[in-house]
Every structure is written in structure tokens, then in C-alpha cells.
Image 1 (spheres, chains in turn purple, cyan):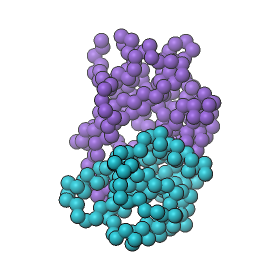
Image 2 (cartoon, chains in turn brown, cyan; image 1 turned 90 degrees about the vertical axis):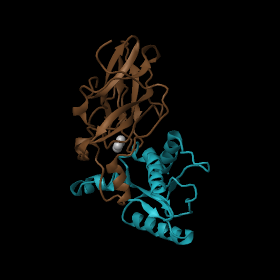
Image 3 (cartoon, protein in one colour; image 1 turned 135 degrees about the horizontal axis):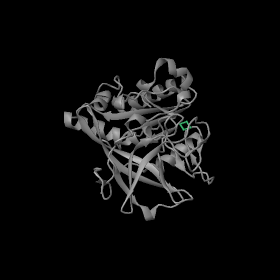
Image 4 (cartoon, protein in one colour; image 1 turned 30 degrees about the horizontal axis):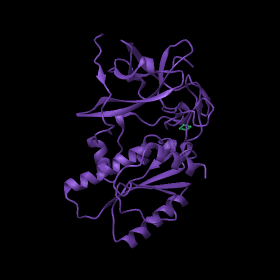
Length: 176
Length: 137
Ligand code: FES
């Protein structure tokens, strides 16, 4: 085993983020203060969504699925990572779509649409593509942008140890 | 995304894409203790997460209506807020609450997202099909 800190995400009930104080205040004040996670600001449309790429490296790896269960058909996996926001520590649920390519290499895509950040799904229209419910962006199985969005879906760092797939931080797409 | 995340210089560019308004209704009456009020807000946040996260590129969350008056008055007020939101350009309005007793008939709104009678949250799949249906209507 490496010196990565592994977390087992299985057998935990689905749980939403703990409300951070800033989020909470935004409601108690009637929403007059914005909560901006990690200082992320809304990007311009033409620059698409860039979800905290800088945080990709060095993220904790989380166990998500056995390698033998990964197929060429993408599957949705959910896992939790802890996040520190100022003094408040919270758990965030993340989603990845994981699959193997023709050569058997496992890769995991982030479902955050690069247009304006909605969540894409695999194969809703039977076209073997990811598609976005918001403005119909489409992406190939490798995450390559086909319409609407200007850049490909991000990937998660993948690490395979002892037959188990671990996911880490978000990295730019390496396949499209 | 939340109304307050939108920068002034981006609004015109984003406007055509952000055609749906999410109006949260906390449904408090003033009889809540501080702990109960916290619970109301947390419950509201939990159900709002089901829409705000996956559809953030098309849905603008407005500030919540926290307190509720007598049902008829409240229903009227809610209807008029919805019709003004539509007048200023939203094509769709989604009302959302974590309370089980707040679902009023509001013809100006397009969809209500609420827990079921036992307080269980709708599933992601449920919401997904309702929203896709709404946008394709
Ligand atoms: S957010 Fe616009 S197409 Fe995905």
C-alpha cells in the first residue's frame, strides 16, 4: 500500500453536506449573502466551468469500486470526501462515471457539464453519449465535447491497488 | 445557481440559459424555537440540494420566503410573486418546500417539489424526470 490515506466509502448512508456557517447565514439573512465554496466564482459563459482544477493534485484517494466490476459501459459511482471550508469541516458527496476503454484502462469522468455546470448523465437518449439536461450539451464516452460545451468533461485521478479502484482529485481530461 | 452568484456583467450573457427560477418556501409561522427554525432551514437546504446542484446551469435560486401568513393570503402573495417573476423573464418557476403542508395550488408556477406525506424526499430520478418533462413541455 502506498502512503495515501484511504477512505472506505462503502456502507455509509448517503448524506448531504453539513451546512456551513456561511451557507446557513445566507438563508437566515434571506439569502443576501452569497456562499461561494472555496472562493469559486461563476465563470464567464465562454470560458466554461472549471471546477477547482488547482485542487486536483494531492487530494485524498477514496475507494469506490472493485476493478473487476468496471465495464466498458460507464457506471455512476458516488463517494464522499471531506472538505475544509474555513473552520468548518464538511463531507461532500461526489459523483463519477467510471468505465474501461477498449484497452482495458479504467478512467473516471466528472459529470459536471462544462457549459454552465449542470450534471450530465450517460446515455439518456440511447446514443451512447453523455448528455446534459440543461441545454443539451453532449459528450463522447471519453468525455469529448460534441455540442454546446467548449471543452471536455474533467477526469478524476485514478489509482488501482489490489484490484480496487480509488479516485482522487479532479484533473483536466487526458483522453479527448 | 444562486441569484447572488451572478455578476452584473454576466447577467445579459447568461440570461438566455437561466430560464428557470427556483423559489424556496420555508413555511415557518413564527412559532418556531431557534432549534426548530434551524431544523426548518436545514430541511429546506436538503431538498434544495436535489435541484440546485444538478441543474445549476439553468436554474436560478431566489431568496426564500421564510414565513407564512394565513393560507389564503399566503397563496395569493405567492401567486403574485410568481407572476412577477415570470413577467421579468423567467419561463419556468419551480416552487420548493421541505414542509408537507405548504403545497398550495399556484397556477403561475410550473412545478412544486415537496417531500411526500411522510416527509420523505423525492428521489433524484423522480426529480430528473419531472424537470426533463417540464423543460420539454
Ligand atoms: S449546463 Fe448548459 S448544456 Fe450543460
